[in-house]
Image 1 (cartoon, rainbow, N blue to C red):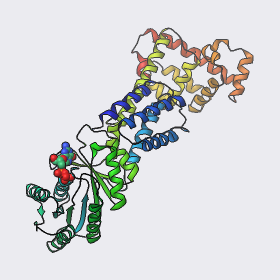
Image 2: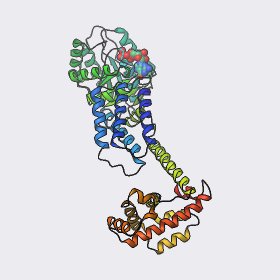
Image 3: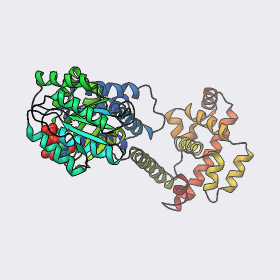
Image 4: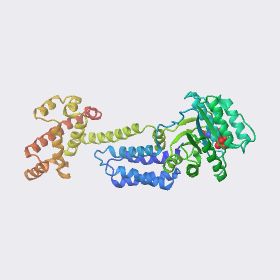
Length: 445
Ligand code: GDP
C-alpha cells in the first residue's frame, strides 16, 4: 500500500538529505512536492493544504544550526505531522466493550467489506480479548448476506443469531440484545444492511437500530481503495448516524494511502483497524506511526535520519581529508574541528581518540583549554571575515583588534588561537601524508 505516495516523498527527501544547510526556499520547494505527492495519493486538496501549512509553520522558526539537521528536521516534522493527523484519541484498535453485553454497530456501503470485517473483528475479540461474541445480520434485503455471516460464524467459531424470516432490522437488533444478555455474551455485533450508495431510507433504518440498542461502538467500514469517495461516505454516515471509528479495508491492495490521511483529517474520527486481505485474520490495528512511516517510504525514520547524518558527515570528513592532504587547514577547518570537539565530549574526549596527540593534549590543558575556551575560539573565528578565515596569515594588528573586540576577547586570546591553527595545520599536513583512512578519519568518525 501507499506506493505512489511513498515513492514521491522518498524522492523529495532523498534530495533533501543530500544537501547541506537548507534555505527557506528549499523547504518551500520540498513542501510543494510533498503537497503534489499528497494530492496524487488522493488526499483531498484542503487536507493537503492544511497539512503542508502545518509542516511549514513548524519548520519555520526552527533555526538550522548544524548542516546535518535540515533534512532531518523536515523529515521529522513531516513524519510527526502525519502521525498527528492520522492518530485518533486513545489506543489504536481499542474498543469500548465494557458493560456486557456491549453492542457494536457495523455500518457501511455494500461491498465495502462490512460482513467480512464483522467476522474478522469477532474473531479477534474472541481470540485476542477472550470475549464471548454474538453476531447478527440485519440485512433483511439480502438473505444471502445473512447466510454469509452465518457461514463465517461457523468458520471462525463465533455464534450467530438464528435467522428468523419476516423480522425488520430493529426487531432483529432487539432479539440480538436479548439473546446476548440471556446467553452471557460480552459483545454483540450488528452487521447492518448496506447499499451501493447512500440511501436515506437505509440511514433511517440504521438510526432506528442505533436508538434501539444504543451501541458502544459504531464502526464505519470503508473501502480504502475508493479514496475521496470513502471520505465522503464517512462524512455522510457520521453526520447521520454518528460513528465512533473507521475500519479501512483493502489496504493490502495498491491503493493510494491518501484515504487514511483525509479520512482522519476530515471526519476527525479515529481509524481503528485496517483490513489487509480476505482471510479472517487479515485485520490489524491501525498504527499511525507505522502508516506514517510507510507513507514516507521510510520504515524507520530514525534509521533514515541517521543515515542522512552519516552521509553528510562522511562527505564533510572526506572533503576535509582532501584539504589536509594538500596541507590546507584554515580557520574554517579549525572552527569545524572545534565544533566537532564540543560535540564529541570536549577536548579530552577528542585527544583521547587521536593517537600521537597526547603531547598536544597536555599542552592545551596546560594552556587552560577547556570547552569554554573552545567556545571563545569559535566566537573569534566567527568575528573574522570570510577572507580572513580562509587566509589567517593576513591578520595584522588592526584586523586582530577588530576581531578580538567583535568576540569580546583580547588580542592575546586571538594570538593563542592563531598559534593553535598553525600547529594544527602542521600536524594535519603530517597526518595527511599518512594517507586516507588514517587516524584523522578515525578520530572524526
Ligand atoms: P459487504 O457487502 O460490505 O458486507 O462486503 P463483504 O464483506 O461481502 O466483502 C466484499 C468482498 O471484499 C469480499 O470478496 C471480501 O473477501 C473482500 N474483502 C473484504 N475486506 C477485504 C480486505 O481487507 N482486503 C481484500 N483484499 N479484500 C477484502
